[in-house]
Image (cartoon, one colour):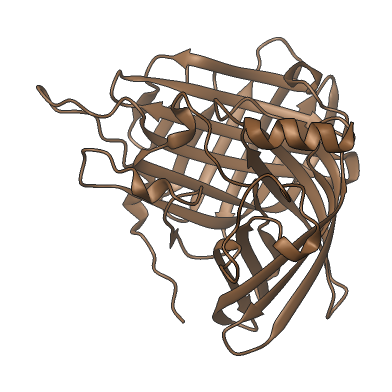
Length: 346
C-alpha cells in the first residue's frame, strides 16, 4: 500500500475569497505543531486556525504540565486568542498577532516554530524536521466530508517530525528532543464550529513514532465490546470499522490497517479523558500490533468550539519489542457524551 502525498508547497496554501466571492463562514485552514518534554511531563499544543471568509484567525500557544489541567486557566502557559487579524505572511514565514511564528525553512520537510511571551514567563525556539513524507489525509472527524465548502481546493496533510530546541517556562529551561506529528488542513468546512452538537462518540488520535522501522497512526472511537464510555448513549452499527483512518509502517513497509480495537482502561476523574488505554490494530496482511499507553500530561485546550478537546502526552509501549515512545493523544467529544460520562464517573 502506498500512501498519497501532497506537494511541499501545500504547507503555504492559505487562499482567501476573491472579490465578489462568498465562502461558508465555517471554512477554515489550520496549522498544528507540537512537542513534548517527557521527563518534565510537559506538552505543547501550537495551533493556528484561519477563517478566510472574514478574514480573521485564532490560535496560539498552550503549554501544560502534569495531569491536573481541568480548566484552561490551569495550564502552565496559555496564550490563545479567539479573534485575531489574519496572520502576517512574508514569504515562507507566518506570524500571528500573539507572536506564534512558523517559518517553513524547507516546505514539506523542515520548519522553525518559535514564540516569546515577552514577559519572561514562556518562550521556545524549535526546529521540526520531517521523518515521514507529507502524507495526504481527509477530514479529522468522521462525517465532516459530508459538509463541503464552496471552494474547489480542499485538503489536509499530516507528517511525523523530529522536534528539537529549547523551552523556557517560568524561569526553567528545558531541552526539547521529541518525535511528534504535525498536521494541517485547507478549504475545509468544520462542523464543530457550527452551533449544534454532533451525535457521535468521542474520537481519539494516537500517533506513535518508535523509529523509522515502526510508525503507527490512527483515529478511532472506543470499541463497542470494550465497555466504552459512550455505551448506552450512541448507536454504533454492528461490524462497522471503529477507526476513521489508520496505517502502520513496519520495517520500511507501509500497510493498510483494516481493524482497530481501542480500549480505555482508566479515565481522569475530573476531565474524563483517557489516561490509560490499549490499541490493537490488524494490518491487511494479518499482522496484529498492540500498544499500551499511559498519560503523563493532559490538558483541556480551547481549540474547538462547541466541543471538549483534550490534548495529552502519552507514554506508549509496543508489545512486540518493548520499545517506548511519547506522543500526543488528542480526544474530542460533544455535550451529549460529556453529560453521560460525568454522570457515570461522578
